[in-house]
Length: 209
Image: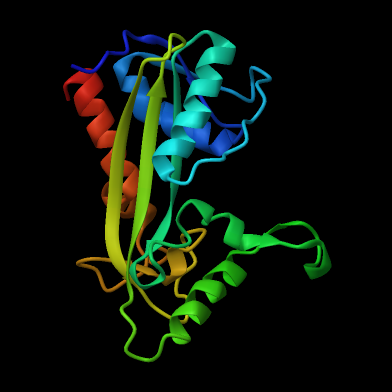
């Protein structure tokens, strides 16, 4: 039986204000007061894991131990079947610009191009199946933890379509849809997304909903 959150404060292992706001909105109905690792001045741990689960646990455990409070972390990304699950845990890394490519930062169009280029090298009949994955890791200061995994299967298209999403959304078509994630209204995307799947499992386990 999984240990339960008893209400009160929960550290969200992120320095991203947008992610804190999104997760807070999801957990507020269950009496959780969410505070970010960034607002507590906690350092960001180095993500050395080879899987989404490993990286989520690294972040959650670091935040829990440093704060003395239970902590929640997520790790997510795109896994392409024909590329043996890549970019996977390196989803964001594929978008990193090098110093000689301009200002440091992330170029998601470049990242989408890397995926498409890799597929095209495999020929016109290459399998284009892919899935977005999300792992949510809960950790307590004493080392106890729980993990919840969600996914949204689909396929990749080219060229990119839509202006509503971010990351690889413009090339990802979820199963059962003709539109990409970047063409689907945000409310609908959030209902069917990998993150929604993982959160539904967390809420069911922790709060019985």
